[in-house]
Image (cartoon, rainbow, N blue to C red; front, side, top):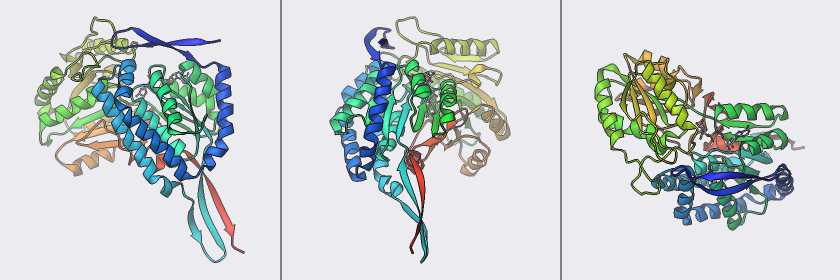
Length: 460
Ligand code: NAD
């Protein structure tokens, strides 16, 4: 039976389109077609595959302005940030194209007069990518670009909150000359995702989204013993040490890390620990910065904070604020939902937080931050590790060696010194604990879309 998904503009609450979700029959057919084209695509010479992917990248850049408008309309991401995302994501494509020959070519790892032993890297096959809405270009490219470079065929399910971007991907792949059915967008919601994981016997499942959904997918696919990767949420901490060279600069950088994209990044700064000796100074700079942010129409070039993408998150934020205030937090900015159509919440700063508050322990995924003073590095390390997540952690300070000592004791996939909320194609993106399983990006994130074949070739 045909179902339609409402596409709602988060800035206004208006339904601007209805998209037909694929029926189970259509999903099965897409998988069948994907299987049929796997052989020819995986045997297409790497140079030819790369040429098509390069054309896709060029098409995206040529259409950047109109694609940014589509993204802003469906997610509420401020237009400048939408353009930034698309422009930055391009670097990931170029990176994978640059390293493809080196990391996909068979490697001879041992040889003598009698035998040659080598490792070949074969594509996984047909892979399912169930994706998120917060950075559809970045998190989409992390999966489907290396997948296609390595010769896989992709069934891509965009988030129901970014369907038009997902449909654009398929259209642009066609324009780039990708053979039909090598990349298929299935513009559905959670029901579509659940069907894909429970009933489509793919050769790999790559998911970006929440821990709760990740667990459902994992249990649906695990008995198939194929690769499963989960890029999940975070509760990313930052620690500002007493020897930081410029408290104001650290405050400005961390405010950006917490509030960029309305705080809806998996690696957004979600909690900040500040050495007690600089705590009040830090708060003053931080609040001043947050109060300077321009909030408003995301299509406006000067807007920094737009609406939340998901209406349901407003309630989570209200709960986090109420819980923190009831337990003694100091509200320094914001704190409330804004009464206008759409999903608006004031940029919110909570000081004097502690770890029985939800804002310090559960992913907020919105424009809200909890800040807490600490007496020394030991206390900061214990608090930073006091979470089920393990995506990123940042230290702002004047002594790299001190930061390195802290890093060696943090259980996260990524650490930052005097930086935060950033992703680079050159290094793996990986979460520990409830932040995920497996990795994307870097040369390892290309190899993640291959299976090895060990070759023992007797010479005589
Ligand atoms: P979500 O889990 O609600 O949805 C993610 C995707 O799963 C969507 O496409 C959705 O349709 C689909 N889905 C929903 N129910 C499903 C089911 N039962 N079976 C299969 N698929 C299903 O997450 P979201 O709100 O889209 O994304 C926000 C979350 O993603 C946050 O927790 C954020 O931290 C995380 N995230 C992580 C990374 C990372 O790289 N680690 C990147 C971006 C976002």
